[in-house]
Amino acid sequence: MNRAKNNYDVAVIGAGPAGMMAGISAARCGAKTVLIEKNELPGRKLLLTGGGRCNIANFETDLRQLVAAYGKSGAFLFHAFSEFGPKDAVNFFNKAGVETAIENNRRVFPKSGKAQDVLDALLRLIDESGAELVSGNAATKIEKKENSISEIILADGRKISAKSYIIATGGKSYPGTGSTGNGYDWAHDAGHRIIKLAPALVPIRVKEEWAKELTGVCLPRAGMAVSQNKKKMINAAGEILFTHFGLSGPAILNASAAIGELLEAGEVAIHLNIFCEKNRDQLEKMIIGDFSRNPNKTLKNCLAERMPSGLAPVVAQNAGIDPAKTVNMVTREERRRLVQTAQNLELTVSGLLEMETGMVTAGGVDLKNIDDKTMRSRIVNNLFFAGEIISVHGRTGGFNLQQSWSTGRCAGLSAARFAKTAKADRAGSGAASDLQIRETE
Image 1 (cartoon, rainbow, N blue to C red):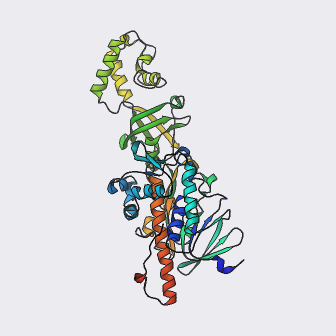
Image 2 (image 1 turned 90 degrees about the horizontal axis):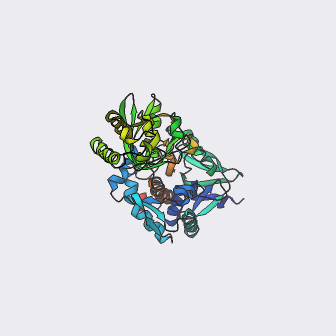
Image 3 (image 1 turned 180 degrees about the horizontal axis):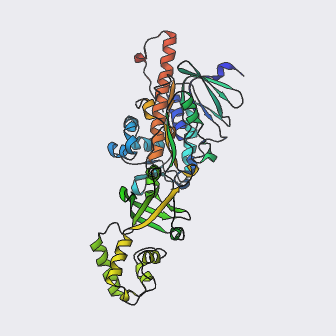
């Protein structure tokens, strides 16, 4: 095989969202770029996002609010988002021919409702940028000499050398899509600290059998408090879905990583407030009014006018009241317990679902090992990181794809700049500050 053909300015390992954006960005700067993807077709995980519709981004235009969606680690993304935020991501895809629509909670989707359209646009941009895509050929080894990566060895024996390298291999969730966690091993072997991996944006298991009998019941907006040792640790609100194993839905998914951390220290309870927009007095007044208008109705049928019918008898039973009791026979004490239960329905967490089922992976390459302005490793001179492999993740609703677009672009531009600096230094044509890198469309 022609050795010259295997010499590049930038080599990107992983052609998921972050890797494709990195490759496009580097190639548009004139860098000779190759993307290496183990799957025959790139973007398999991208096709699963947003239920197959691809939640491209979240149109949160307040930079500080956007950063806050990523928790304690969000500040790391401040520069990447200031350079390429939600508006930029939407414009990027619009220019690529993907019309977008902003739905509830500022979630951005392609108007077609098809993730395939987003992937097709990215593949077209890769081709137009001049980047080479090597698919169906996994990177198996990364060779390091002194303080730099020297080459990548592929499964078929091909050796790829480049002036700069980007690892964008994703996390460990949905391993069937190719996210098997190899990138973490390579980063660790190269000297980086890996923050403990855990599932994030993942459903949870609960101990109560009655909860599992409510499979499919959805609370569009409920309050949720998470407690440990009778101390409230997390407060949230949002959509909650009962499943055959426990609980899911955006409110649960967003709190799951924190719940996982709490579980390491002991038992965790979740308290659901079915009527989170009412205080106790308002709720009791509403129930009294319902009872007065329907004195001969059974309790479960009367409650079913205010909550999912399957949940009504469960609330009554947890309050210690016979669901078949007519409301004109419900005592004041029973009504008090009913109000309390409806606003504090307690479940015991038995665990999170497995790592493979999480939408994203919490943990990854320690942020202290990465320059937030360039995504360049602080350990290895010519190595950059992008996407989920970095130890930062956001809430559900388009935030994690935005992180991929932003860090991917930042890494791609920085890697191209590093490669051109290396070329200039070898040619004796001046310092890096004399180089001007312009991304072309």
